[in-house]
Length: 387
Image (cartoon, rainbow, N blue to C red; front, side):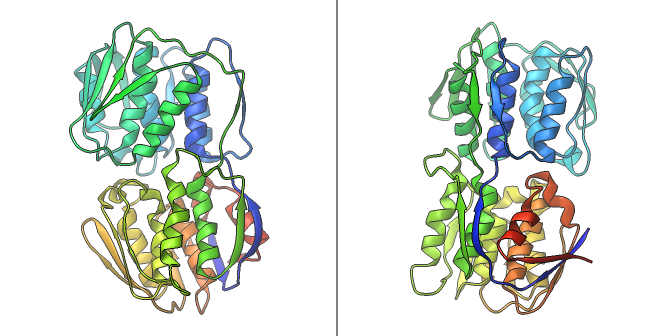
């Protein structure tokens, strides 16, 4: 789908959508309860639907688990399927088969699990055993979260040891909070997580999924750039690290105009596309650093964001693990989404403040996390036309 964005000031109020990260975690925990709780999910997405479909399949013998292109579904469910589902076959699409999984496979192999191949598609066999699980912390926090769902179910105790600092730790904190809500305890120590075996998931009867900061960030940024936008329903006490968008935008706005700043994005990598857009409209230079993991997302997101902004007229320099953006007027242009939902949403917000029109190819990618994004965009006065 090709969308044309005509520059318009965004103003008004929208409600934040359900956090897909929180939804993944609640759905997995609920699946592991004998008595199922009621879960209220107001907004679904392709990623949430992938997790629901896989959980449903896990009730079958030798299940086929189609993760589509959702890394969270794949990584969160792999250790669990290794424990519960002999002969589970994992498949995926898009860039998912190429995204890093070796470290998780290696530590699972060291604890009794076998795989028919080193990347998707593959079949899982063997028996997951408790013990020591060694992982890097700078590849994917989902490796840790996936193990945290499975290890409490094993007979013996386990420990997850990190050999490098954990990036995106907020998502592991979300996992631990979700587990706690279902009666499962995890002990955090320096560079490791200690997991007692033989635990049971206890239904809390009813779960209301919190709202999503990472998707709300696009509209919060629009307010900072020059709109008048309010997003309701967000919890500032959330363990979602992307709530830092609020304090970061305040740093951009220390003066009467947006000023460039330097931001360590190692814990908030999903905010990089929209922070880069804010930087493009800020006076001076904005540096987003410790961003190397973005190269392993739905696309090489670091390169994709750089290309997107350059095509719209921004001055951007791409480094191995950073972007350097020099603010100035943007003219508009043509953007390739790279099939990345966050690049689409960032380009839409950016296009709303450009001097001319912006064309986005592959705009349907928003369905991965925020299917009603364009509906909310138009509600705020945005102009988006299919061409």
